[in-house]
Length: 179
Ligand SMILES: [Fe+2]
Image (cartoon, rainbow, N blue to C red):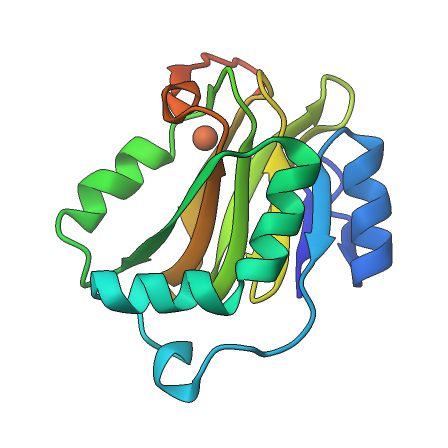
């Protein structure tokens, strides 16, 4: 289950409802897909064939289509990251730059975990949102953020898009951001 840490105060928030409430209050969508639906063979698998990715999308088809129909997403796919991902260090360096998109960035986590670091507001500053199995998050368009892996260094997520071009990262130089 997700957890939030507010960087400036070190305050943490846990539990589906408190997290939903907090993230919604700063404009970030949070939902939770219930159930442990993946077959055992896919639960702890972070190197996935196209067939296995398709299998995950089928397992979550109902949840994906429900989210897509409410929010206008037209395409979706699976992304898997782990130490086995080619060029993972380079990729993470690229990911760990604060940036924005012209479209929201939505992820539904189906295995593993990772962090979205999001600028909640000028006043609050940045928050670290740990997302794991069942967590669905959408970082709104134009909100500075970045993604990184946790110490476990593995995640599988469904990505949903309105237009794939909307997901291009625009660097956001923020003097208020300290790693
Ligand atoms: Fe992003």
